[in-house]
Length: 307
Image (cartoon, rainbow, N blue to C red):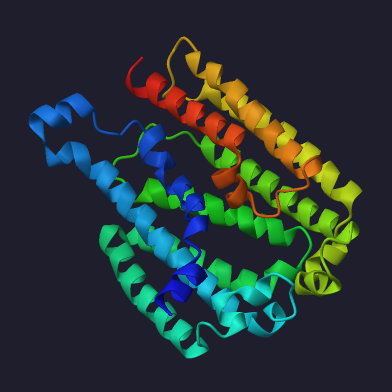
């Protein structure tokens, strides 16, 4: 039963919560490794510790949302060719146990969130309410469904900002880039789902499970992906030479190729490889995408903290 509960919590999707750490990195509040090893002062470690605590709390909160989704959709999931194997839908995890686990997660997450920061606690509550609205109603409205998903990523970034004290260098451009990137991933996921239905690799039960797909077509989604992917590249490029906390010689622009390749790679996976139905799975399985993200992260850390 414990294994079934952990599976229902979907730890593989916790990678999405890494957006919480954007603030501590891009506001240049990561500790200097040499100073920490020599002095070991808590003040240097506190921003990173608070950000990691916020990341952990978002993981628990998102898991409670996943459990609630599976409880609400249990009957529909049982008619889905894949989701019927989920622990709650298959009967491996009793609904009563899932409810108790959700209550326990919320009793842990919410008080700890407010103890970190009152404003961070408000963001956590807003994220939870938004996801409840999404699960019950908003996920059935065309375009709004993907916009709500994007809002969830923005709230993660905002939570990472608000959990820190004295954020001064975090650029608003990163909110724009986060929104556009989340929209890109969301529309890519919708395209993959529509393509699977069109090719018959998903049954009619799968289409009924996500009724919002009736409002999308492949040409329409492809247009949206083109708009959002192009705008994402432009917005990130503008960030690399217009944000106030970047190197004055504009070396941050050297990270643009990694972003461009990552966007192109995901588009290739969606349109050519016919994957992308679960972006978090691609992040954990596609080696070129992993290498690109790693090189981008290392480049950012080098330019911000070493160069």
